Length: 235
Ligand SMILES: [Zn+2]
Image 1 (tube, rainbow, N blue to C red):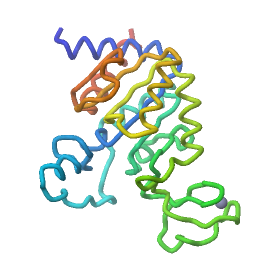
Image 2 (cartoon, protein in one colour):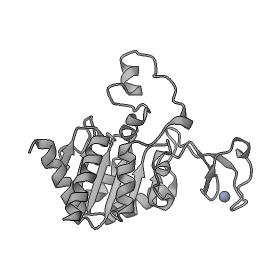
Image 3 (cartoon, rainbow, N blue to C red):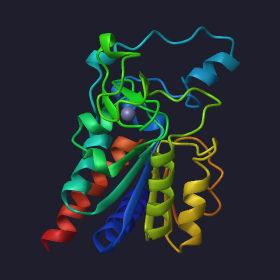
């Protein structure tokens, strides 16, 4: 058995026994769907630092979830996943079947508008922007995207803190955990006594404190984990 097999087996064993799983995803989970990340080998910031032009623009309407997104949806459907926190705006978790009540999108969603008053979200049809909110009739509908320097939506933040406090396993996939409040969530989980697993190709601030570390691609790790988990549960 090689080292990757051993770590996959450990991870699958932990998930088989988990009581409260929370996952946290970042740009690295969507690179296999053709969306550029930030700090990866061909990421936006890596290219910028090398003086290279930005990568070609993404056609969002054609982007599809990949095996990593579907593996997380499988964990939801098995009743294992209690909550998912994402830094991504690409809508791929919802597109892969994650229930809206189980996800916090820290930076918004390119396909949604949000109300400036009640924070409810609705599908982003262009002619609805700046119209009155149909739910509370108080606010206006604006882009749900959180720009650099803006604060995280209150409900997304509060839900994430609450679930992170309750979890016994916290898995990070495709995030370097460098931006606040991304850094706060694994910290909360560790304090609550949870095990921390990190799947990310680049270094993170938590590499010395995590219980299991994967440097391999998120899609590879998560799909291998699902096959192992299936076998564990069958036997
Ligand atoms: Zn409203």
